[in-house]
Image (tube, rainbow, N blue to C red; front, side, top):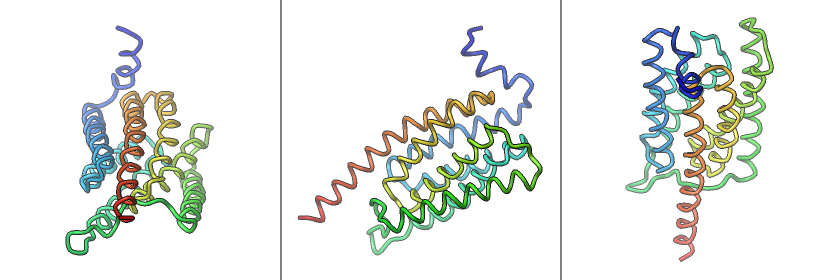
Length: 212
């Protein structure tokens, strides 16, 4: 068998069928969620919620606390985002694609810093030995947390943060032997780049319309 197939299949040889099936379901719904996000479709949240709840359970069982905390936040933020994107005045959505202002940039920076502290504290609370990959977890958790908040408020910059953290996560999960998740985040990276340009196009179109 080729090294590529070995890379993806070896970590699952001793894994229970239940966890393989759960990871596959999370994989499919995770990809669907990003596709819906790119299209600015509210189904980003129900599909994402399924993926994050399953992934949270998997990471909890594997004692990857930073990743577990990240997916717990995703789940909570999905509920908020679902509500926020649903708000309308008549047929017009109250939350539209826009860029972050100075205040929102500072809020994002604060969220990032708080996430670093909380995630580090969780590792310490559970007595988990913190290696260099865990510090990468802590950093990407901060980036992902902020990206999720920006997405819930339809800020264009959410895609920039997704791209950054996804690129870091691909080799990290590959190193840990999570072949399917590594592939998922590679696909996420591609979709996030597409999402950035799709939202930027929609934003420019909206600005041109408002100027008429």
